[in-house]
Structure formats: C-alpha cells, structure tokens
Image (cartoon, rainbow, N blue to C red; front, side, top):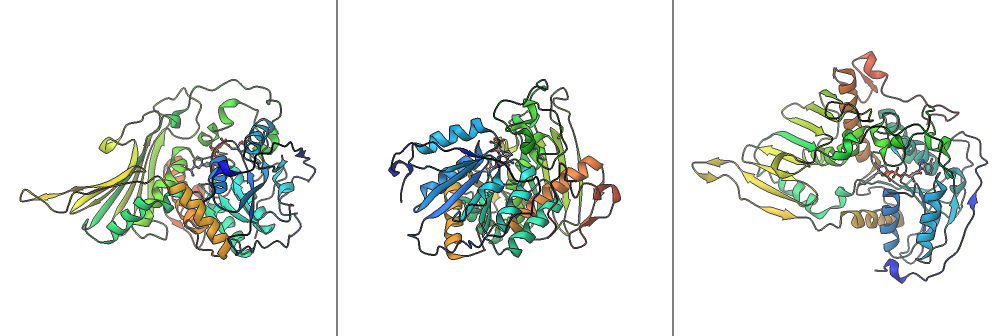
Length: 442
Ligand SMILES: NC(=O)c1ccc[n+]([C@@H]2O[C@H](COP(=O)([O-])OP(=O)(O)OC[C@H]3O[C@@H](n4cnc5c(N)ncnc54)[C@H](O)[C@@H]3O)[C@@H](O)[C@H]2O)c1
C-alpha cells in the first residue's frame, strides 16, 4: 500500500477559481464522465468540498489508498483553503483550488467528490455532483431535513452514481462482530436498545458578539440556501451543529452514528410505529446553542423500544461510557462503543446465562470505509458499506427525534406519503431554500 510519505514532493501554488456562476443549482451542464476506472492501476481523481476538519480526514485516508490523486480542493474560506493547499503540496499533490463547488464540478476528469461541508449544504452539493457524473462520499448526517434525504437518494439513483456515507462504523470489524453476535440470538429476547451520547460540545459556550465577516470568507456561500443571518463566530466553523438551520445538535451529529448501529442490530429498515421526545436547553441555558443540550427520545416498535438520551455539557454516562449503545436481552446486555463491546450476562441460580466476552476495536473503521468506497467506485458497485439508503434511514430517525422534541408531540411518520399524522410537524419536513437556491426537484 502506498503511504502519503511516498508522494513526490513538489510545492506549487494555484489560484482560486472565480465564482461566476449564478446562485442556482441544477443549471449545470450534464457531463459525460461516468467514472469507469475498473483497473486498480488507473488513478482515481478526487475533489474535496469543505476542507477544514472531517472532509480533510476523509481526503487524507483516501490518498493513503493506491492510485488516488487529489485534483481539486474547494472551500468558501480561503484561509482554510490555502492552508490545506500548502499542506497537500508537501505530499506532492497540486490540486486546483476553488471557492465555488459548481466550478469544481466542471472538471471533466474528476471522478470522485468528497463532501465535508456543514449539513445544510450536503443535499445541493450531492445532487449537483451526481448530476455532473461524479461518484460521491458524503459526510453524515446525509442531510439537515427529511425531504433532503429523499432528494439525495433519488438523485443518486437517477444519475446512477456510486455513493457512500461517512458513517465509518459500518466498516468497523468489531461492529460487524457485534452484529453477528446479536444475530446469533444469544442475548435472548431484546426488548430495549438504549443509546446515549454525552459530550461537552453539545452545550457550546455563551455567544460571541456579532462581528464583521472574516477576510477571505465567502459568508453568503457558507449560508447558501439558509435564511440570511449576521456573521458570528459562535455559529460558524464547527459550532454550526448546534443551530437548527445548519445542524441538529447531538441528536443528529452523534445520533446517526449510533442509531445506525441500533437499526442494523435490530434489522430495522422502516420507520418506527411512533416517536415521542422531550428536551430543552436545561444544562447551560445561558449558552448559545439553539439545539437542545438535554434530550430524550423513545422510538416504539411492535415488540421493543429504542431509547435515545443526550446531555450536552457532560462527559460521563452509563457503564462508565460517555456514549454508546446497550442492547438489553433477556439473557444479558451487550454494551458497545468505538473502543469495544462486551457482554454483561443476566444470572439465574447463581450462574451467568451467557458467556462474558469482550471484543476490542482495531480502529481501522475509517480507512476501511474509504477503501470500500474506492473499490465500489472501481467495480461500479452501488452496494457501498454505507449506502445513501442506510444514511437516509438513520438521518430520518434522528430528525424524527428532533421534530418530536421541538413540537412536544408523539408522532407517526408515513414514509410512503411523506407525511406526519400532524400538520404542525409536517412544517419541519422540508426547509424553504432561500437566496435564489432551489430545492432539488427530481
Ligand atoms: N464521520 C465522522 O465521524 C464525522 C466527524 C466529524 C464531522 N463529520 C461531518 O462532516 C461534516 C463537516 O463537519 P466539520 O466538523 O468538518 O465542519 P467544519 O465547520 O469544521 O468544516 C466545514 C468546512 O466546509 C466549508 N464550507 C462551508 N460551506 C461551504 C461551501 N458551500 N462550499 C465549500 N466549502 C464550504 C467551511 O468553510 C469549512 O472549511 C459535517 O456533516 C459533520 O457532521 C463527520
């Protein structure tokens, strides 16, 4: 396997491409590049949209894989963009730089796009990338609303693209072993799955003052289809997660990773019978998040429950873990997080009902996940380790949890009619795109 250190070292500079396109999506010409590079010796050329944090990690692991090349970087913050360009130049990569992703998508021999932007951008960027004939690795949660999830699935199908979602636990060996153990039936009847995620960043801090847009930042292109709002560092890089127009708080940020494991473990491929939730800004009400620092959600199925709890501003939790899942069976409880999973048996007549076992992670989830995506791109295999359908299902669950908590209602969601059993809740299904951006109608 090639390592990043082996790249030829050349340092180069590149100019940021101008942002001359009108602010509409879907007006792009259709490109003919269909990304057929079956031979493992052919180079796959990747472009990254959103370079600051997770997108960069995705790109970095992608470039560890053989016969890959970074053709383009795109970010609306030229400070981030130039720093990343300088970093990648040390590895011998000389990508074109862009401030507008639509210009980047015009590169004909760009095979793959990684989307590492805030959640409110994923839908437009994925749909445009698919329509431009690119395969896509999109970060989780796939979207910031239920309607956007559906639009993205439709676009990937319509344009016949290979898409993988950045839920890397799907490529983790210890998670696969956990699923095999659950499917063995040894836990007995599983009546409940508890999920929890307690993180300090869920409560952020008191708000910074409104300020001028920092130099080099295209803030209009950061807000994109969301309502205009004065610039403030408190809702910008990284922190946007805790503001409804950009993210869904811990519920979606960690929710999709962990709910995905619960749905996978319980073989669920549809919506729950109903969802009920409560929450508020209770722990640090003086702080800036709009999303709830404290929240509980119950998903009801025919014969079991899934329960979600988070308490932002704390980092302790059940079983000595600040986040995780507990599959509670009649013979024992399986507790899992990214480090390991273990069995705590129930006892009968002073005897453990099942064996105490513990399985450690190998921490290769993320690299395996990118490797799987690359292999699927080469083989034109749409069954990636985490398909858009997988990503959509758990993103919808996370949004259900937020909508139920925000409306203070117990809700049933009909995923065929695309409607709740309540008019007020229906208003949360689809964002109203603004600033001349059009919601993708496919
Ligand atoms: N898979 C994981 O474990 C994991 C971990 C962290 C984050 N994430 C996900 O990754 C995504 C990004 O999160 P982050 O923490 O990197 O956020 P971030 O705010 O640190 O970085 C986002 C970057 O996108 C850029 N950007 C914003 N709008 C853009 C646009 N229109 N065009 C180009 N660039 C734009 C920003 O300037 C910034 O550089 C989120 O969806 C998040 O949920 C996934």
